[in-house]
Amino acid sequence: MKILVCNVGSTSLKFKLYEMPEKTVYATGKVERVGSTSEAIYSFCNVRTGEKIAKDHLSVPRYKDGIALFLGDLLDKKQGILSDIAEISAVGFKTVLAKGHHGVFELNDETLAAMRDYLFIAPAHNQPYLDAIGEFKAMLPNALLVGSFETAFHKTIPKERKLYALPYEWYEKYGIQRFGFHGHSHEYTARHLPELVGKTEFRAISCHLGGSSSLCAIKDGKSVDCSFGFTPQTGLPHAALAAQIARQAKVLGDNENFAVVFAAIGITFEESEYFIQEFRRTGAIDRTVVFSNLANDPAVERIATPRMALTAAEYLAFEKDMQVLVILTDITNYAEALREVSAAKKEVPGRRGYPGYLYTDLATLYERAGRRIGKSGSITMIPILTMPEDDKTHPIPDLTGYITEGQIILSRDLYRKGIIPPVDVLPSLSRLKDKGIGEGKTREDHSGTMNQLFAAYARGKDAKELMTILGEAALSDDDKQFAKFADAFEQRYVNQGNNTNRSIEDTLNLGWELLSLLPRTELKRIKPELIEKYMPET
Image 1: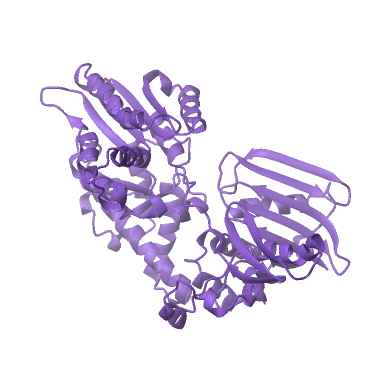
Image 2: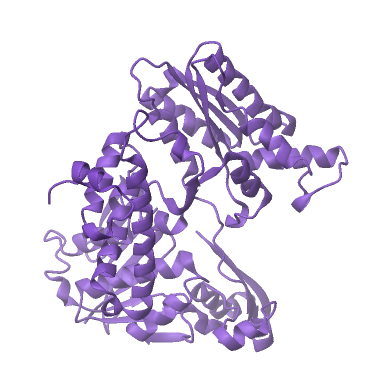
């Protein structure tokens, strides 16, 4: 029988096809940078013939696409490995976490529900596995799907250490314990260390480093304590989004002079080069003023950079009557420099060590945006920041949102789905939008369609969450339609891509196309006359 083994990482896929019980390897494959639309890497090896395939700069936005690459080569007639996908009798997965599951289990509905129960603990691992398992279930309905859960190795950890630093009621009510990920790697280390050290009694620290990391304390070949698998909370494509906004931004009027002022604050040389090359590649450099402060530059320069950029913007807007877009990235680096300088001056610290005047200081930057009476030019500002630990209550995002009256938030879940840009619509908002949209500015239907799309997407997300818990059969027909709308909204409306340059009119028309998926009786936030005017014929 042929068995396919699949290892799903937070951004990778690894495959091996075995003939059992001989344990003969027929083929191996690897996909790196899953989620990328242009930089994914794929390799395949026909072990029997030794033939190898390597491809790069691929678009692999979803795990589904990576699986399709490997299966395509397995079924390729030239390779001669499989003539039919049904020859695969079973698929084994190196799974991570599932509530109450430690060891090897069939991946049935009960096991998958247990994996979903721990999604909040291992979002970067469990969700990719659930996606991949779902794909194989659909493609191989008769195959046995098995998961080997990593936490089996860590069953030897004493209970008091599993509960360390956790509220006991969490353990009683939810069964939450500290378990390590990457158990197979740690288990391998523990198994082979006696050969290396020449004794069976030993103590060691095993370290797994990859897209994520974990540490395991090993005593005499057994796990005695382990950290969680930790995925650094970085990697969202804010730089790519900033570059895209800079090169695609424009004003509606044909006769308007338009410029972009770009301030890079405390970034790496690699990031700086990325922005410059992007602007040159697309021709946006011809209308862009760039201020670049690198991570190794002095903190004082980091504080001065956005002010220099805004001074240039004010000159262009109010002396040359231009419409200016100012992009500041990353405000977090600016605030860190401000804290550093404040500490050096021995000032009394405020929240989390930042100076008490952080609000005032940020306001002196953000409130330089706008218009002047008697001047035709304007300044529109987009400050970009990375939220420490994705915490919206952190002083930097908290004060920024308070001053700017709005924010665009990126979502890790959407990014893992291959949605580019991964804008999390529901927590994103603008409290000043009404002054910039509508008839004479964008289009008369802008406000109504925006409110209706937002409400429908929120209801669709709720319906999908309910579906996950109770199953699709528990939903009403209307809820099923809203759930389908939510998927279509993410894939077609939010998922614009890195290079698609969609106009405001195109976006509004696309919104109407999506609203046509819903019953007209549910379109309660749009005036009937606008529905009659703009709703496409179905």
